[in-house]
Image (cartoon, rainbow, N blue to C red; front, side, top):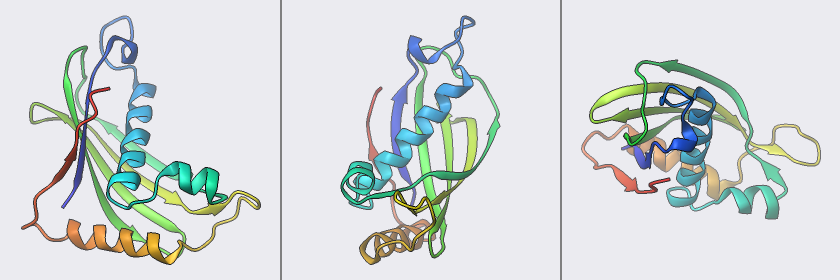
Length: 151
């Protein structure tokens, strides 16, 4: 089961040609990850980064752009958790519009201590939530959860 959130391509996302300027996709991708942490894992980035003294930076991001998105396009961002390590997490996100893939991305996030900047183990409740998501992703019979955003 994947996690889906939606966005609408706005003028602010576009270059003078009216297509999404690629750095804006990275903002959308990060927002999708934040939405997933909050809605599905029950751990907001605010709680992790501000209250918890930890951070979840991106250690790897690979992106393949397959088609342009234009002002007004509705975008669906589908996140799937693939693997959790001691302190790492592999995700894939696909952005599509009207059943056409626009972008495919692979991420590795790392749970780190803000004090040292070094990787630290996922806290047990967060690890359990991630493992549940990975198990759900492997179960094709479950339905997707969707969080509309519109921005």
